[in-house]
Every structure is written in structure tokens, then in C-alpha cells.
Length: 427
Length: 109
Image (cartoon, rainbow over all chains, first blue to last red; front, side, top):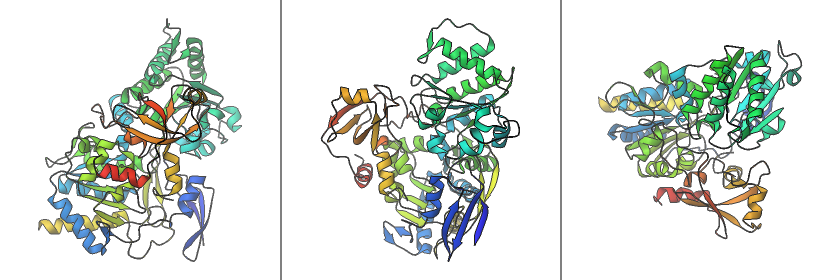
């Protein structure tokens, strides 16, 4: 059986043109997918967790859920974290659990584009959809982002090679600029690569803004670039009919963090006095945008939400996962669709290892190795349906194309079991 | 493949550095690299990357890199993960397996 227009549940591009062939209940082939997506579909059954465990010992699902309920019900400050690689229905359930337990709710954006959200809340944004980029963008700037290795089909579907309504010759009609501290694979295919000094993005963005505004700069060099080179880029930006900045963690994880994004928004805002310019964060996990969206619907805030007072409070830096862990505040954790054991700096990870952790995942990770309770779940977009939000905020439907292993349920179903258990325990 | 697979481990247990730094450190193929910051140190494999300038090392995000990153977020929720001052030295120490890194985290080491 062949399924068409399948949405890929890997990165924020959410490519929606995959063709998947199923034979005897298994995926036989995937067309149109990038190599990472191919691997996710074709190897989704390998190294799977097949049974739920408590302290590494195989346990019936019902008893495992009971243990998870016991841990969360007795915790004074549980952390509910992850959520960016699952579908919106599961995220919604996790928000409900955080509210019900009076816990802290955070998603992986706190260690990727959290600073982007902070800046955009302060100064707004000039944004667009990826289809508009394909049809109109004649100047594409990748700043601190590397789609050739992280968002493989971004280049062929939206930003570099595709022919669009007003970009009839594809790459020939576009100028591609890369700004980065090292020569990435994306830099190698760009028309222009500007290698800048690390932690100097803020200065360069402000200099470009000043030049676009018509100010004269006395500096001969900024961020390691000669001023003539910077002036040339400012002129190219002004001359573009439709320019776009796709920025990545090169801006959010370096010195300045949200202030770098503030400066990028300022530059784009200045450019909009003269032409059309937009900026879009290169969101990594396929539904990290959805995690922010669903959390905002239900709590008013996109991440870093604390329910300990009975109502949602928002404060990144205080209620973000790394802060709650490194201050040794959390006394239990529920981890869904993420791997903080591998991705958090060691002090935060060390505290995670000291508290009871419940993890819902498809495959073993350093986090499952540190967890008291591990519950296997179905892969959203392959074994469970749902909704996910693309990096530009467009919601797309994830399909269920095969059944999960018997006795394995979706994130949403397992979280619903835990929530039901918590409510029963309270009664 | 999963986070315990050989391909994942090999994608994150190394650093990349410039040809000039390789020469400066007199690195030989048998050497590993000891990366130290004010937070801690870790031993990793290394590869040459001609796209890097001297004095800059690229460390893929993962359990090894997190042994030398700070959990301080400066009230933003985001730790600094780029442009961190570090010392790199050739070493004959072996690179720890993922299980050893996880055990180190568990034991609070």
C-alpha cells in the first residue's frame, strides 16, 4: 500500500511530500525524503524499547503507570519537560499534567530558540511563510545556521534552488549569503560567505542597521570583517526585492543570546523602510514550534511556565529546565520526547540523575538510562497521528501509516493514563 | 538508529580543529585531545577541519561536549554553548564510552 503526501516528523521543515510504501505491516520504501528522514522511517523499528520498566526491570504497563503517578503525586516540584518531538495532542496533555501537579513546564526551545522568543516578545517580528520565500526571495541570508547538515531539504524546497512564481530561474535568480564563524557546508555552496569573529554577531548586526539607516561608521573593521565588505552587504540588502534572514543557534547560543535576535529584528525592521525583508528562525525539532503554540494556547506562555501557585507564571531563567535542575529544585521529572541526559550541561544533568525520572520514548537514550520509570511509546507521524507546526508556524497533519508494537501506545494515550491516575489518586 | 548507536556516538565524541592547530599541537594520529574549561574536562577524538580558523575548535552538541559546558543561563534559560574559552592538549587517555559518561553523571562526578 502506498501513502502519498506524508509529513516527515524529523525537523522543522515538516516536508509534506513523502511517499511511503507499506508491505506486510512494515515500511518498504520512502520517496522524496532526505537522508535523515529516510533513516528515521526505515530504521524506526530498530533499537526500540518494547516493554515498560521500573529501575530497569520489566513491568506491566499498568503498574508502570501507577509508579509514574506515585512519583508525580508525591513530588513537591515536578519538572515536565521535552515535548518538541511529539504531536500537539500529547503536548496538550502534558500541559494539563503540569497544571494538575503544580509543576514546572518547559520544552526544548529553552535550549534552542528560547532567546528568539524572548526577543520577539519584546520587539515583534517581520515574518513570512516558506512558500513566500520560494516564490519571492531574491536574497537569502543564513546567519549562524547550517541547513545543509540540519535541515536538508530546506534548500531544495524553499530557500535556494526551487523555482518560484517570481524566481523563475531558481538559484540563478537568488543570491545566497552565509554569515558564520566557520566555513560550513552551507557556506561552501553560498554565493558569498562572511566568516566573522565568534561572539561578534551583535556588533555586526548593529553596524549593518546603522549603514542601512544612512549613518557613517568610523570603524575600519567590525567582527573581523573590513568595513567595505559590510557596506557592500548592506547595499545588497537594500537592493533586494524580497530578502530573508534564516537564523540559527549561532545567534541564540552565543554571547548576547536574545539581544542578538533583538539586533537582527532591528536590522530587518530598518530594511523594511526601503524594501521587503523578513526573518525566520530555523527551528530544529519537528514540532518545537507546536510545543510553543500549544503551551501558549493553554497557559498564555510559550515555555518556562510554573504552576506552583495554582496559576501559570512565566519566567525564562527561573522556570526553564536547566535552571530548575541546576538549582536542585526539581524533585521529580516527567520527560517526553527529548533527551536532557545527553543535551543538558553536566550540572543540570547530574541533578536529573539524582531525582526520580519518568521517561516516555521510543528508543533508549542517556535519559532513559538515568530514569526510574521508562515507558515505550509509538512514533508520532509513523505509528500515531496528530498535528505538528512547521518552523514558519503552519500546522500540518501527521499520519499513522503503520501500527505500533502490541501494547505500545502513543504519547498522548500514555499521558492520559498518567493524568487519569493522578485524578483518581487525589480522590 | 537511536542515541546508543555507534553512528550517534561517533558523531558527538570528537572535536574538529584547524590544520594550523594540529601542527601547533604536534598532534599525531595516536593522540586523543583533552578539552578543559573552567567547568570540567573531557577526552575526545579529533578531526581536521580546513574551514576552521586557528584557535577555534568545533565541538558537536552531545554528552561529551556537555562535560565542559556551564549550566549557568544568565537568567535567560539558555546556557552559553559557543565561544567558550578552553584549553586543548594532546593526551594518551582513552575516550570514555557513552555508558561511562552516563555513569559519571549518575555518580555526580
